[in-house]
Image (cartoon, rainbow, N blue to C red; front, side, top):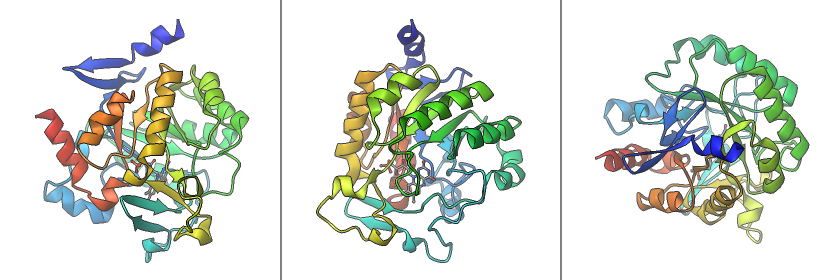
Length: 300
Ligand SMILES: Cc1cc2nc3c(=O)[nH]c(=O)nc-3n(C[C@H](O)[C@H](O)[C@H](O)COP(=O)(O)O)c2cc1C
């Protein structure tokens, strides 16, 4: 019965697969958390690309950069992003560590101007189950299309990568507190069988985070070793993140959002593995014009 209900949320639209949430929001393309700021419009340095028509945020459902209950310093310093973000061959390694100004700031500064009819926004949250509940309640009055529970940041000093109970409790608590659709952002480090089995009634889609450096390159020193190694994303992470797409698609009928797109052909490759929507993350750091170009090409 459950499988039947979720399968209805994956629709074909002119041959293209897409995801439909319980609130009716439908999407094929997403921007990953961290890619286009806190509002989905882009970071200040990305705005000129919008004015020049190389970036069209309206083509995507955007996920905000992750917010926590209290402001969090993390490792990012605005005068020096290179401190915790490095371009590597075919990708990016980052150890931002959830730097963010906190949910209060978002509600006062960003929330009132969100217009999901123009740029559909999912808000990404990280915290203990009780904090998540407080945060979703604060978000209720804003025009957002969903909540992403970030259960997979490789750059924080928490046990979230190895604590199934906390992840399951987070999904259950948020589901009880809010009617907003829940996306769960998982990691290749997770005990994915258990998480999927225990969250499938709460979660409306799964997204995939960057891969801890030591999993991809166990014999190589990370340029961000001083921050614990960081998370790798982009083409360099494809083998691992796509393997997880395939695994999730086999394990569950809940839709999976495919990451690590680098070239146009990657979109079809990740769909063939079972992804029902596409997400663009670190590609924005390397080739910020490509996601818009790719989507326009597909829509032609
Ligand atoms: C600079 C940077 C910042 C990121 N910040 C967040 C974040 O705040 N929350 C989150 O869940 N993921 C964050 N991510 C991870 C991305 O959202 C995405 O899951 C990851 O890059 C894998 O997708 P990709 O291979 O398509 O880039 C960040 C990634 C980068 C490169």
